[in-house]
Image (cartoon, rainbow, N blue to C red; front, top):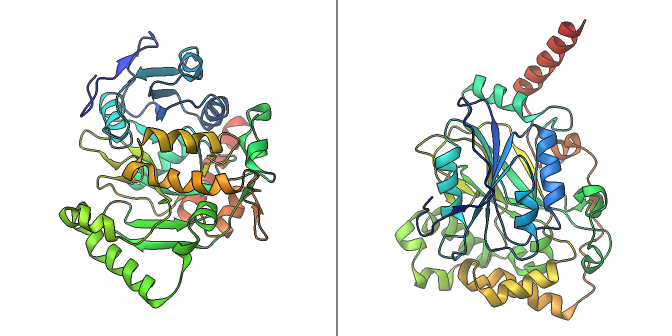
Length: 362
């Protein structure tokens, strides 16, 4: 299989028996040295009702590829290609989605991202996508919610019982800032612990900063030829990582991700939204920062990881916990905090299906 710039090689040897469109929910991901997180990742999505996984492995050397090949429901694709040249893996994901995702509801996430949506603790993805289909929606967007441990990051090297939430149960309840943009889902979201710790200047509220950001987002960001110019990039305002994600999409032949799973080609978006619990901040974060600075495969010469590595060198015992750190309790808690959105329609749909199941069981 060819992506825009690489050949992806199937390495698992398993036959791919096609099902009728819409019958399966499929997860698509990319992976490089994620053995620490993979068991919890697979466990979470299997519990939600995912049928199969399609994962592009980018030359892992920690046993990730071998672990994935041993899983009966995982199809593995290998590439030695440049992550940067593939636009952060966007081209790889689009190629595999085009081949195996068309006609299916697809969950496209990184291995450190676990999907939550209103009532996900009790309602599986099959029921959610039936509701979305009934309403004519084609995608659901999410906030990327960085999770972190109670103790210093470097102490968290084991995931007991494949439970990432037990290892890193805390998050920042706010502030999260939203700016409009042209690309689906139409919003750029910033905030959270990585901004608080690594990009404190992004929270400056003086007039010149507000005007700079507003000009960039409302005008320059939405003009591709201007946005992509080296001169503009040199003078753009400093931004922390973007927390906008569109992980759940009913994939059609004309669907494409524009920038990994941050933005997607125009889809009819559900009013409900979810959260991707993000488990980047674990015991391997120090080493990963150093490795990615050296590899220079991420955006703009891995400038984000350069900032991580520089800060970590000054504080090897870094902890993200602070006065407002909040322990994750439930989906309802995330809705109450405004981090994901429920609706009366989705509440009625799941209540009706639960009632019908109880009636049928009698």
